[in-house]
Image (tube, rainbow, N blue to C red; front, side, top):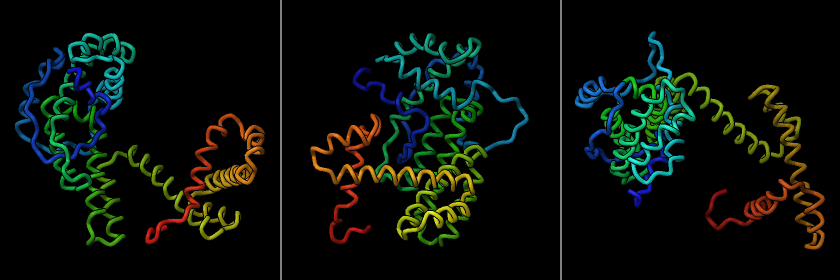
Length: 312
């Protein structure tokens, strides 16, 4: 076991593994007595493949233990255990789980952890992608992962522990297919992407995605404003219209900070080697001095002429 270093522990449930189909048959590990009654249900579920659930509306009380946070706890336990075998891990796990979970959840969590370890071992045996980035391979990989999950966890456990990641994975598969489809116009692709986002992602996931996309949009707008030499007033007006007053004001402050930083870099870069030693101490604080070499290297890289035929 030591030679394998139990490397899957660092992977967690968030990793997408695109494979060419099929999986290695292995037996589930010991199941916690609290969950033993679910074993027959899991076997029946595995025998009849089904699509894992999209966001569901339910009136049942949520199971406080079955959340994605428990997977994060498991990954911390796996890292902290520093075990070279499953037996060692399971011996150390109760004390580690006690750091993160309330007492009435720990016995049940221990059984879930053992099945999580077994599932990760089975996932490692899946065939690796032969064509990374191919949407078809990604789809087959998602299907294979779903089949493995169903061998170790009941449907309600899959939904609670992995549901958010499953929905995110399927949305990303949709996105890859849409980006690879050359028959779609930009408008059609955007509409289909919005429809997929609405279908797969929870409101919370959509909010996170909206924030991430907004950051990319701000960066692109700033690059466009820089390229045309927009005045501070023009920059503020464009940002205010796109993102609102508070964001525009914050970006204007960031502009001033960047200008001041670049002015100091200019002064330092123009100075002689002897002067730079003094300016290093007077122009920059301790944190900035750590950034100085990297910032100058990035400037030099950006200013270097590009090889013929290479786009900007």
